[in-house]
Length: 419
Image (cartoon, rainbow, N blue to C red):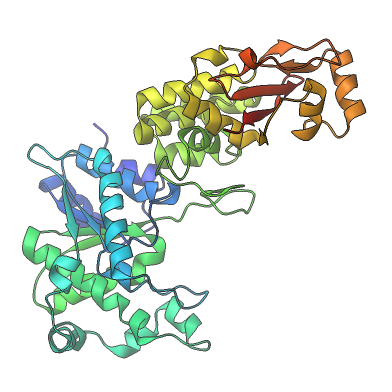
């Protein structure tokens, strides 16, 4: 059986740690209660959070006990960022986001057995603390010179940083202390940008005469082309299916750069080392087949959205390019797929196919549309159109409202009849 730390190191999931040898012994010798935190700064987690979520899953599968913290308190404050002061959201908004994110975290871990996961909220112990208690019991243990030495704080000293954001480190450190006191938590991990906050918690627990405790960070995920991971043309790639459709989620992974695939497989896949190395080699040998990308897309879409949604998404990907039946696609999946390609809304009577080709952007002009039809390169619902004057019969509408237009083998767009 592969050692947990060795596996995390091979996957590149440990960037910093307090004492790796001691952490290895700790994880090898007993069941460890660990925690990872998520601040509700939006209504959903995004794919960047999956590194932390799936690392928690790995630790639980190895027999350890997760505490998944959603920051009802810290989410109202905001961790300092170099770009400037965060906008504060109302307590009511943050409370709503806490509930949504707790629901999103639930499917990734199990809540039964000897190492059952627990969802926790730092508002439970922060809200009951008075300002005087906070300054006396927590603030007393934090030298200001060390807080000022934190990189993000130093970067903000010129432009200014509020006491609110400056105090964030104390709140997160106190979270670790409270989870250690209440649940016996002895390990925290988070993204590498949290290293200063995490080690502040380790030091605070020591100063309070407790411990020893441990910590490590995972790397921030980057893309080889220099663009930000977790972003697509439509913005962030969210876990919530109402904010990013399962089809768009699947396409995000399918469109991964070849250079990123080996790293993404190690970070996100639960395949074994041998399976991943074999898949990477096959992807490098036949890059046009996108074997690694397909494996990533299928595994992660199944993990996040379930088997049935993944089946629908794969069927849509095939059907839109003429390799499956459009009639078998659920209307929600079909619309999501067409929206990714570009969805033309039509009101009233449907125009000719040539007009639809032009208005959808598949061709640049009406003459080009007629030429595409004449040359046999225009398709309506995967059926070749041969008549330049062809119109669309109402019966051709999929689910009574959609049409799939395609030019050539790979370029398609959608049409939706407005209701």
